[in-house]
Structures are given as C-alpha cells and as structure tokens.
Amino acid sequence: MCLAIPSKVIAIKDNVALLETMGVQREASLDLMEDEVRVGDFVLLHVGFVMGKIDEEDALESLKLYAQMIEGIDDA
Image (cartoon, rainbow, N blue to C red; front, side, top):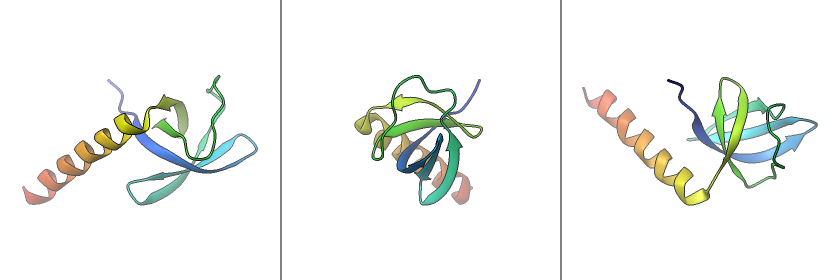
C-alpha cells in the first residue's frame, strides 16, 4: 500500500514542481507525469514524485481527513 498526499502546485521550474502540502513546501519531480501540470493544480505526491493530478474538491476533502487523523494522533 502506498500513500499519496494531495498537494497544490505553487511553482514550476524545469521539470520540478514546488508544492504546498498542509503548510509545508517541498519540491517534487514531474518526470513520471504524462499530463501537463500547471501552477494551481492539485497533484498526488509520493516519495518525491508527482504521480497524478487530482480534482480540487477531492484534494481538499482528503487534506481535511489527513488533518483529522493527525489531530487524533496528537490527542492520543
């Protein structure tokens, strides 16, 4: 099982995207993407690679669920 995290593309330089995920910025390779990725898109991030695009509504719902899981861990 792999976990891909929804992230928003905030910049692209060459074939590397700068992503924002729950307040954290990181770079990720676009080498595995066949579809065009643009600033403002939501994508799925896995181990440093953008794996695919995701609808904004689905991305925001997933991020909401991740935040709830993190809250549950912190409360335990």
